[in-house]
Length: 172
Length: 172
DNA sequence: TGTCAGGTAACAATCATTGTGTGTTAGCCT
DNA sequence: AGGCTAACACACAATGATTGTTACCTGACA
Image: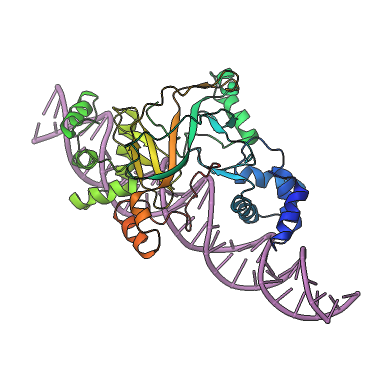
């Protein structure tokens, strides 16, 4: 993703307005590698600008996605994630326990749809997801208390409890 | 997934009750290759048993998932899908336009986490998703009307309209 | 057949996300 | 600088998917 200044220029060149709220979101996203959900972006943005609304955050994120500046990601953790890294082809590691997502930079270009297996679909490049446990969750493999603690920092709360989608549990 | 009769026996052997509602759901799922959502299972079940509730359907589906008889699948189409095919290792083809999901039986066992790329995650087998357009959506590439028609048959309605999650749009 | 653990269903809640309406403003023109 | 106007931002409330709660009901076994 580009720098906030480049994004501002891009917005202007497209006839879109460069509002303080948007600039704030640009700054928040820039350099973020944690694949934040909209809610998390909202929290960060509010730290700089208390009056910004969640709706504005959603809108701006979807705009950036349309412009191709960020990628939208749904890995079954209950909320959509936004990925500012669109310059490198990559896949994802997903923690089943806390929902954390990390980039996986690997070349799976050998992966192709076998002849006859495509059922007539026209498809693009495949997405690969490795599900498992992140280092933090391995470390506190015992307790629930501590897991909650590190979840509340930056990720989807309480995966696999109430009102939360289960992750995509393909036969694993 | 097993036959309805086998499932009934399994339930009994586990001390679970074999109710008419559950049997109805077993029948609906058996042989279904369309990766139905809970809503779709509910519709089908209601055709046989008008009084069954959506809640019961969700409960039974999650039970079957716990027992390992079906797999839960979230491919970003807005609702969870249930996959009765747990006997064959497979991946998925997802239509970006209508949300249809098809099994992709292919051996991607060569796919491994490169050394050093795992960031300390402990992971299992990867999931591979190919996104694109299904034959039906290619056929009516023009109209919206007809697309709606074939969506309403058996899949998530109106992907990419209101209240619907966007699919996982990894850089494609 | 009676008992009872466990299943059902009506109801309402919850979360993530988005539509609506109204006041505000960025960007441009003069 | 001042004004215009489409585009924005925000408060509010709705929506779809999913699940908790509670009170009633029923299958399975004695």
